[in-house]
Image (cartoon, one colour):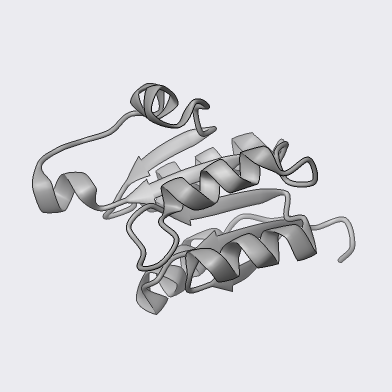
Length: 132
């Protein structure tokens, strides 16, 4: 079990975490961890050093943007790949891309996926980023 890759899912909606965990349960070689707040996700990332972080953007308290920025500033977490998830486009009609996020945040996340999440896209993206 020690050679399994750890994937940390940070989302303020427990149902969204459950859905992502279910989708990722089909990917062999990973185990999932979760947090329901940006603050908690940041602390868990620093504590557990996951191999990948899946990060919701819209959360109360620390947003996904803030967590992403803090992960990049910390030497112990800046190398962790990050997938940003959001329902912004679905709710507002305004979409983001990873390149636009680089302009906004100074660094591009490793992937950007819109909610509702397509299971196959999430599985392929996670597998690719983890080299599985």
